[in-house]
Length: 310
Ligand SMILES: [Cu+2]
Image (cartoon, rainbow, N blue to C red; front, side, top):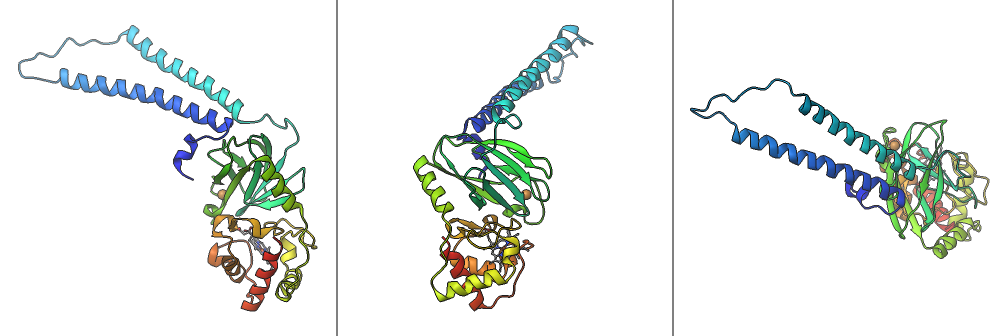
């Protein structure tokens, strides 16, 4: 994510915002240029020189004062009108229709629920390209802020007060986002990715996500499955096909399909996953996932199990 992402819009909503920004910047830039030229001219042309008398002093000019009051007022009214238009273009009215996806901000990760298909995932939103989806945004704890600069406006996730947002991408691709409201120690590792895919790829992803993982076959993965059931993981996580159905931590059903762990703090490789299970705080200090003091063999078993649910 870079500062220029905002100017590189991929959705009508982000495009409206970026046009408004460029428009206002242009007008302000012109005013700055005119003022700078006039000031420079006055300083050079009218500076005190030997033998030159002080020019005639003028006190008060109704015409000038009215002009320099009227021009800024007109400019501000214009900017106001365009801003309100952009706000309407960029944001859905409250409850226009049933939302497609419920996104919940947690310290420090994003829960993603596809309300129609029932898919649950984390820190990653797959969407079909060119379709306008309605996101309902909630928070499980403190104020977060959902922001994917190339796709649209930022929106605060406020506890007890759901917000709504259009999510749409006109080009296939991966668009990075982040929490944009300081929400505690690990706020910086609350990244997300929106992956816009052609309809058939998206449908294939949906199918894969909906599949309930088969029980593993290797002895190591079976040992991991047993640990997963016995060691309180089920109290915080969801894993389809098991008794785990909680939302305190991210859904782990198809964890191996995701690119990141822990809101972007590490790439999702088997070795990083092992590191995470051994000591979550070594990857994300203060994370809300406990350290279980697992032995290396236990970690390897859990990794084998979680990788097998792909
Ligand atoms: Cu945050």
